[in-house]
Length: 250
Image (cartoon, rainbow, N blue to C red; front, side, top):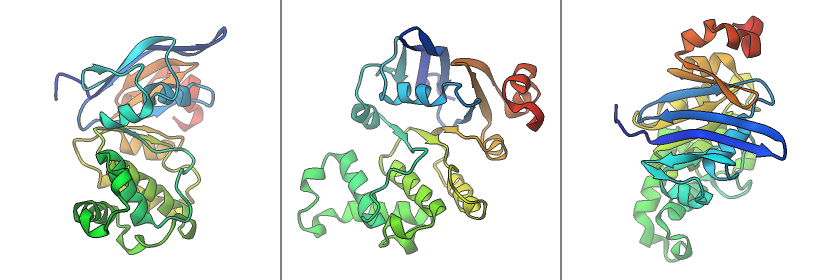
């Protein structure tokens, strides 16, 4: 394991007026980590992710990517440094064909968005890369369809494809199963298995079976603070976690 983490969250704190919604949160992700982030409703999970990605500025503490303090960098610059996020609610262009959306994400990564409407023959590499991403996620047969035509589980796969087009070092999966019918969940699970082994992933998820099977480490947030950090089997037995969150499910 690399001595320098890809993502290093240091004593992160966020308050709105007198309300502390993130309280002294610290953790790190290294290459290949598969980490689950859980907590009851109102625990501060979304605020924490917004602080990491740059949607919100911290009141105190810092966020580091590859050894660089990015606490006050805007979201696009954090993406450039290797941080990508999928959303709890899909953020797809509903009528733009999937392959075009993936190609656009690659152009954004490469800084060639303003050139993308030149002759398409100029962008063989972009098209080939988009095709490979879609093939990896088993979306190649849907490439020329638009998200509005797809099942919800397939839409979540497209979101993952867009994130992978940014070539992230750290991927934040924000409730990848939100809204996905039970019959479509296996396709998302299979897709998660195809993600690069050196990618550091933080998954926020309410589906306990999914996140405990996916993660090799769990973070538990309660009232804005990190309540526990450990292996899934230890978190299941953790007395404070059982009381604060898992309850009978434990």
